[in-house]
Image (cartoon, rainbow, N blue to C red; front, side, top):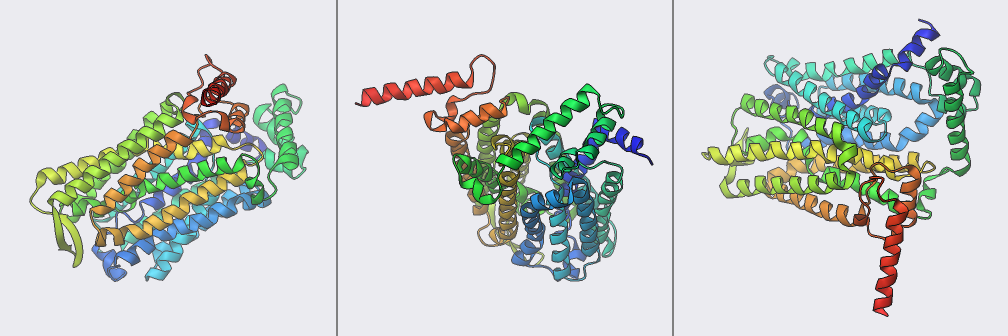
Length: 502
């Protein structure tokens, strides 16, 4: 397979996009790799019926690995190159899948999930708007596909009912590895290593049919070259550079958004939805799995409007309204559980469960579905888009890695803490997550400026002049009012206020 064939693949946006989304699909596969086996009798027997803390630790092992990967990915990609990093992550994922599939005890299973989690974060990209939404959509597809594989495997007798889904996880990683062999290295990374001629050759193959003097090729080459020069001279040399000027505020906003996306409780619904429906009174393993499958389908479908309209609706409305809706539905679930539930026993474990109240059971299921839809159409894509937009070129790499690491550390903590929460405070767990959502909506309103449709220069002005106006005064970019107009009006308003005060 020659260089021309590689160029033809790399130049096709559909092929490139498909392979870029495999990384997100791997993330989704691992998110639901445990949800379908939590009530599997063969799984419970193999791992000696894990208690709430032990089960939380098993689930939390994956985000623990991803946390390490988030901190390491920038350095690794800079040293090895983008292509080699993805190839390495694919191999790591296969190793993690093998360890999980062959695990004979909890320790081996935890190690396998940590290895898989490390691989997930090494491949995660950070791009804007609709493309980030497509990445989020691939995650939801990964969740859905893995869950249905687990659902189908639940009809198998024996340990193959949970080992088979874990083993099949390696197939997308193998496809990604083979596909990346035909992709060229990133021209930007090559220029960063002063290998300009190789970078120009790749750009010529992709954009100019091999002609290095093609106008588009030269334009792209010069643009990337200037970015590389800028980042080398002005870019953050260490994480301490993120403490300068107005950068800490941006880092805080990006990291706190990732924190709120986890505190929303969405991953509780992804990891432990079987427990949620079990407590609602939906008896029978099959019934719970079927009800949960509807939720995963809704997660995929509800992400589609975000893909289409994320760059029209604006980031602030999606964050604020999404968190308000999610908080409301969680309070409804908690209220129904508190009113109609009681302590009972399922599989010899204490469970807060509803008996004999079909309406309450249906109400909890519906509210759970609406909660998931609220996240999928709002916070899901925005939580990855917004951090990538608010950072300057010189700090983006390191700042995004901190935001992503924040996502994973909270994912890890909540995945571990939720099973003991259900086992000890039951319905109050939903009120805790609901309160987090309402607190998030307040934070979004008072602290998060709108970024949709704005250039990097305009966003830079937002944070440079951030002391002069409130975030809610900056609406979506419509072309009717410039950012300078808004800043000027805010300064004039503040000046009038000061005079009146005097």
